[in-house]
Length: 413
Image 1 (cartoon, rainbow, N blue to C red):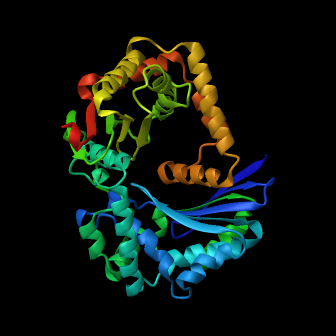
Image 2: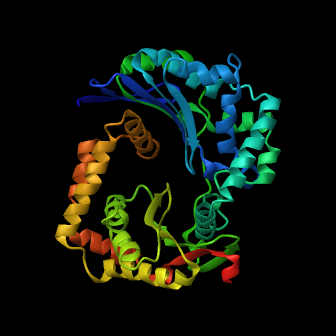
């Protein structure tokens, strides 16, 4: 599979990135905006996500149904998602429908009509989504964990917001937020697949006429606000849900490659340490995994598991033992090479999907302003050795710095 990557920045600051792959006939196109939940003031918590929903509810030239059917009628699809630090509107379609895809995606972000009746209807939908999340113990556990990890910071708030803020949203607030945060210098257009870069630049130049305004700002995280410890919440559930973790470095830190491999050692499949030593050997958790979240100025590492309340302390102790092993005994060269091969294989196979490739390119562009080639990325992983993993484990895994968030059945207290 051969590919050609090109990048153009328009005079208004809008960046367009393409990776042309000549062995496929489809295109994955995304408009990325550097505006997620951490860019919101407390009184507008959840507006990034709500805006992502409501731009699909009509524009000055399209109804809700016309938006929905615009690409579906030619076999494509249209969707969006919101994260803590960005929002992405994306489409997948056959290459001959590039003009239609550009037209509808740009229409969503440039000319949304925010009809009052649709906004009120969508409030009910998003409130249902919020309440659904409050019925999922794993989501509650992560919400409690992030609130404790990032106290008094927008990173610690849920992406969905809360009932009070959601009910307060109206067309004026949505329009103001859109105009303030969706400027071209905060937006990136990424396409992967059978796409002609010059044609995409021409199409975008003709329709994406929003003027530049400013670079989006966010509430910086203060590391001194973190306090290790324990938080226990109760709910009418059957299992105990535990998250053990702590803040780490940002997405710009070169150790991001090392933490990805370390995370795979602990949680990279059925042969990983946490799965084998806690689920298989001791049978104290059906679901267990470690995770890494990296943001612009901080990040987090943690381990999540769900277990019988009677086995909660055993599961927690076994997890700490596994983290301590990473500090006390360097991973063997044989295990490291196996994990690196597994991790690299996942990246390479994922890149065979144009949608996955577009998502990777978009995230890199959002953070680094450039794209790291797949070969360079694989070289970065290959350079990681036993000593680097051991050094990172010694730097991070200090038990006195762990924070433990527990969601417990009310009957267990």
